[in-house]
Amino acid sequence: MKKFNFFTRLFTVSTLLIFSLALVSCASTRADGGISDQVKADFSEAELSNGIPVVFKRNKSGQIFALRMIIEGGVALYPQEKSGIENVALSMIFHGSEKYPYEDIQKLEYEKSFSMSASAGKDYSVAGFTCIYRDFDSVFDLFADSFKNPLMKEDDFDRIMAGEKESVARTMADPSGLLGYLLNQTAYKGHPYSTSTGATVDSVDKITLEEVKRHAENLKNAARIKFVIVGELSSAEQKKILSKLESQFGSLEKSEYTKPEIAQINVEGETVYGSSEQAGNTGYAIAYFKGPDRYDDDYVAYALAGMYIDDLLFAKVREENGACYSIGTGVLGGRDMLGALSVYKATKANDLQKIINEAVDSFPPVDEIRRTLDQHKNKYITSLFSSSQNTAGVASNVCTSLEYSGIPEKYLYRSAEVTAVTAEQVYSAWQKYFARSSEKAGGEPNKWRWVSVSGPKAKYNFD
Image (cartoon, rainbow, N blue to C red; front, side, top):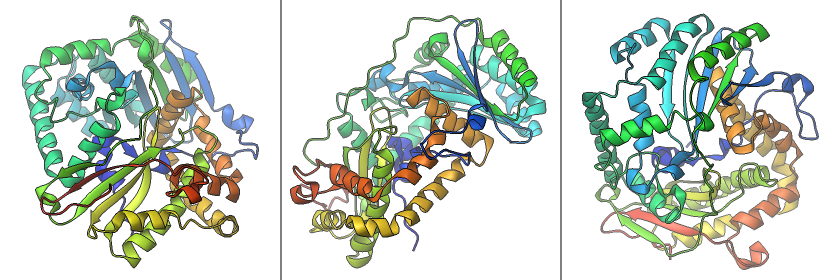
């Protein structure tokens, strides 16, 4: 049976990302971890008159073109009781403008087969479109007018908020959704990330249209905006696009803005328990713990160690003990990341934590890792290649690299980094981040904190 990735069920609530945050491209790489001069030449950078940075990435995509606007800041810029307001503001912005009513946008999307989207994130939001290059002028005009002159109609706001309320109700009724909510409340208590990207049961009735309008205006700050452009573009075409960007966005004012400080997240505390009727006699749980950030030296070794642990958990917890439907590792994304281990539909309450700890601590010795490491590296790289198979995926990779490292081509280093990891480094990463006993960790055991949801008559104890 295929392993079920529980993290995908929690993504919209908790912004949980699997290890594929470490994105990779099919571009050529050098053994020293750098990238070839030819690949670097595919990137160029420019700046609008108001200081907005523009990054171009040449990509062999035929006529497919992608534009992404990054709006920096994220959830740290607004309070927890307004969770979801940026997502609502972005939905309203692209729900009709002065020149383009929403019905016309939908019609154009169908006729020209382009897609326009926007979403809020923990550290930055992204809005943009993907289209055939011949349609760039018309789609760009639509995008720019939507961002600068949204209609912000009350009936549209009412429909969007009705959808938000339905989504929140579904989340709180679903065991995995409730777990994601409790995880966010627990892991990020007192931290800037306590504000959620999506509306929550605590915020959905507190968002007003006037506040959304003000929030949308605050997004029009040249100090917070960057552009990423991906396509098979000549220098002349890049200059044309730059001119279009200048005409529409070069006049945006640069208001006061300071990038939020993101402190380290506390991973200590008692287990948090929740109850859901829909869980029945099963349990859902997540342990979170300190992990490396995405560009730390030991991140790739940590990701590979997680692949070994996934195999051990599946074999020992699910198959040998029949203790759950699925189980696996991942990360909680952000500028300060956490490691996580999730349990989906647990059925064996009494010894579950003991079984999990024993599975994690049965990590193979260095000699055995060395024999199987290439196999895991191949799986890792193969799964990551898929993210760069289309223009939109490349644009996403460039945005992530730019925001989290300041280097737009940073994601291209991953292939060489995976290749260079040794068995000793993988073993060391397991000891440093995963090992459950003081003996296996070579000192103090790693601190994990559990959050669990189960049915009213069942309790899956992780104390």
